[in-house]
Length: 86
Image 1 (cartoon, rainbow, N blue to C red):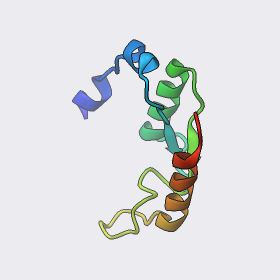
Image 2: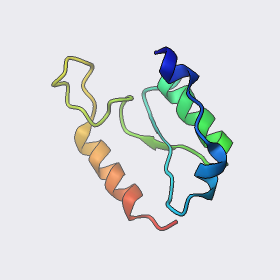
Image 3: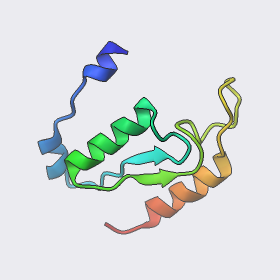
Image 4: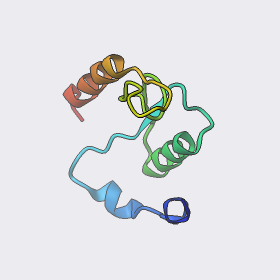
């Protein structure tokens, strides 16, 4: 976890990227480290995170023992986000 929590993205390079960057956060993950990180990165990039259904692993169906996400709803939201124009 130390390497993960001490990493700082190159925000200047990310802002200059020609590709669209989407920051996502799970609707059920408020207050978790993953959610706080998503909101912090989005703020530094001048963006608003896209809220995805379920938790941090909302795309998973429970097959790995964690609380099951909502993979169908997650997939629908992902398709919606990918179809959006800049």
